[in-house]
Length: 183
Image (tube, rainbow, N blue to C red; front, side, top):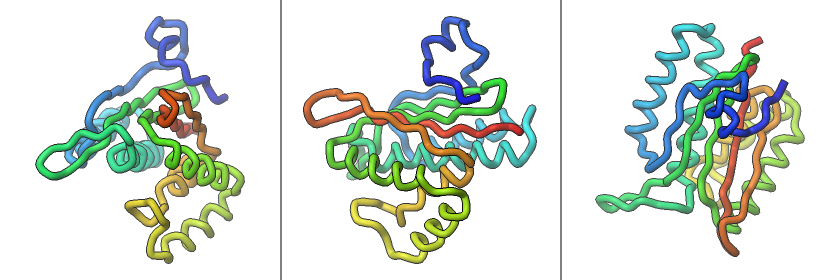
């Protein structure tokens, strides 16, 4: 079962889900490493290693997306870091990894096209796209080779859940959710 994205319901106790972790603020590489290791340690207490590794890898990838691509930036020492939210939720069936960050219209259009493409592929097609994309130098407007969303979808095993909420005429809140089932 895929649970609805409703943090308020979890905090009011009207849910079978529980928040394992939530962060709101500036995302740096050091923070990602620290939070990732904390999450890995926490989950290893009660999850099988393959589940821990999948959740950990997806969390890292999604956090790096916020750090690199959030349109809300913090500038320090000639570097810029994205601001956003990172959330890890435990459901009766598995885990949800959720990120929220600000994007502009161009980013929204790119993300919609990219995620729709990825969500229409099966696991074999995702693997082929991953290999093909990895062998390319890079996609335009990306810091990496464009592998992040493909890797998230492959590790999750189900389509990515994403939505946009308008902030103003040019900016949107991008909500990305990946689910890892324990079965």
